[in-house]
Image (cartoon, rainbow, N blue to C red; front, side, top):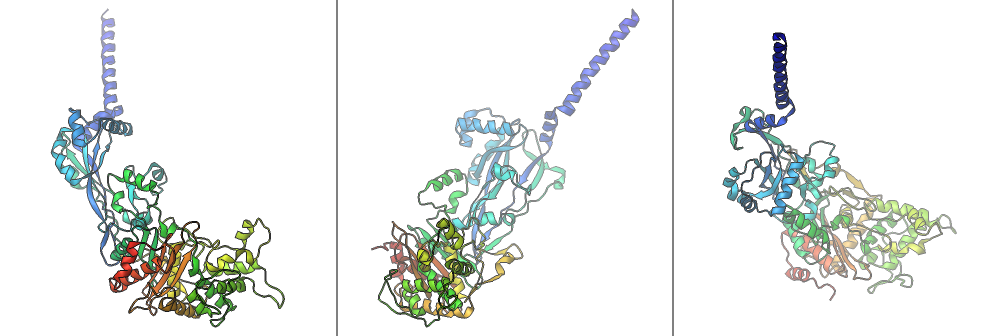
Length: 601
């Protein structure tokens, strides 16, 4: 009997011990809540977001800055709301929005901080800061958003927004986390690795109310955030603003380049938008509005709009023909308008006169000589072989493929070759009479405005160019990427470019550009273009560089549906040249003409 009782007591004791040990094991090993609570009472870590690198213009003016905002995060297991109505008023939320935020936070993690209120202004935070003590589980996380002192060049600068799940899944660097911000377009995207900096973390001890009472481990565990590199752009901020002002109410683009370096001085896409609209809490709403705008302000026209080049293409035709030896600068060709139309009173011009008067029959004949060169006295070379040789010449001027500017989404335009026409004619025979419209920059030719500005720089340099770029220096080294210091030569000898320079000077001195592009003390070299745009009015085009000797600026202007190139485009280009070289216009009437915008009257 005693042995039986002793056994029962022992068994009971062991059972109770097993229960206690099991519970202790569960609490200390399996159930993370107590560990979590202990850690939350004693130590917390807050991510320190770095200052994103500033962007400055070529003269040292800040064009993209940072502004501090506050993100409020909640830890769902700690977040206690005693008065819902008070919470809704304090956080400026509707009840459904409030519930949705709680649901998302709980699904993400009961124990980890989750976004609650994003990008609260410092002023708003100061107004509610004292009341946050009534809401356990709220964490304050300062960060920065972009601020734009000049409010210009939105299409070139790009914007920054929260990384998407798709982008996060493709992040091979493993740098980004949910809720991080990343450059989405423009320079913000292309130079993301330099601008983003490096996150840090600060650990501190908190009391049961979640308030900081001391640094954890004396701050030795903290990791300091490293701010992003400063990026100095090639842009002249005041000139950029001026160009956007001139293009208000119009569609098109202005690109200005320093020929001696390839540095882009202005990058105007019209219509545009205020870059501040895509920075801050209203990002989603503003982005949607811009996306559905029929005028497409998000469309980056200098890089993505593909147009026929028009008459400015005749300069390239001249250079190719000279190099091939099918004409000389003294070659005269009658203005026979029976095959192709022309404009203005002129006839039997030499090359300089043909460029000055933009003679269509002259260049129709010139290209035919290039692509149908004689093999023998009675035999002409196959047009397709001649066209492919011609296409290689044109490609050496940076046409037909992207130039490689330091911006995303650059288009390459189109330079047709024999394979293109074989496909177009389903491998049926074709000849020069089927394709001659490309001789005057019409037909299948397509260019983007950046390529035309680069063409002006090529002529200014007498035969070479540097890849156009928007960044002058990065970080302490203060240098652009090495590829932008490389010279690219055309297939045309430098000596042949002098006739183009002289002809372009004559265009402005006494030709189609004399009325709105001529400047008093600066010799401008330019070429007008009027690009077919049926059924709408023609596009107005003008390329130019100045001064004639030792050029400092090359520019291309496209104004959509504005008619003759000698009107709007020539006016705007000359105003931009004045702005850059002397600081202001000396022709207020031309400025008023451009601002009024009535070019078709």
